[in-house]
Image 1: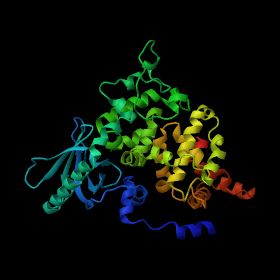
Image 2: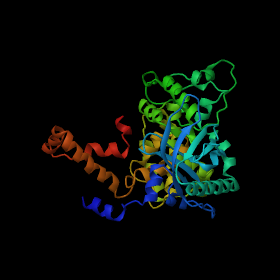
Image 3: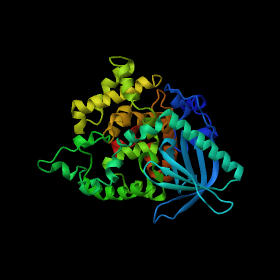
Image 4: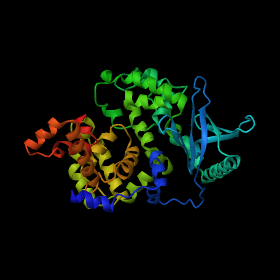
Length: 421
């Protein structure tokens, strides 16, 4: 308990209002961006404004009152209850902003996104406040244009599977087999299918689980319908249906992309093209204590999976773990990181996995993968208290045999329950 108390005093600080906003909208933190040399002296003041938001799509008439946040280079929205509807989109994905001819006293904008959706925003604050917000939004969009970020959207979205899934010229959803493979891939004399989207080892070594029991084909069609009408990857709008679809389950081919979209690691990957490859080249041949520890654990990482019985899978896992240790030398490599990275590499490319690992270790699970493991130990105390309150028979049994509950539960938490699923 002393380890936890010391760590709490030194590591955990009350987050500021700005940090809480960044966490809620899954935005890259200022500290995270500070690790990367980015020349962006031009900054726009942050601002939020009361709004009523609706999506200009036939058949979708829901309107949500909430707040619109300008946190350059992002635009974010959250409904008043902070649950019903929200989104975070890079300003570089906004293609057009129009002032609508609304009735007297109503200030409304139409935002056209990269994927062709129109978001109608009714600004309900005072006219002077609305004018200021629009002025800041205009300045922020100009900066994104000058930086050349808008030119990067097209090549980036091609790396996302959702583009192939909902493309008008593609019938991926209809051609999807239960095991996640494409029917067209097995036709005789068929031309090899050129895929530019990122994917994990599962595309080559198959995904875990029984695809029929997982209802992969049904999930793909449900998600394709949602993504077609509510945006995808960089422009995803999180309506209540999105939460329900996540609860139903993510299809294997889409799982990696949704992980990075909902966690916010997609924004780091979009903002730093080529960073992962450059980091590996810069540190090629470098040996540290972390790289030595990584080598010891490579073949202990999900060894039952076919991908990690081959050099292709082991090599990918090695590169991701080493790249993270080079990026964050203070933490380097810690126990159970190999299990976590091995699991996400089944569904994500190396670059996607690298940025997701960054978000997991630095923002979502602070103190989990650290020498003191204070974050994990703290959660263990909370878990033990919950077991004592809700499952007293199990708690009493562990007390009788003089075994700490953490002996069984600690590996669950460290591996995010991967080994127990």
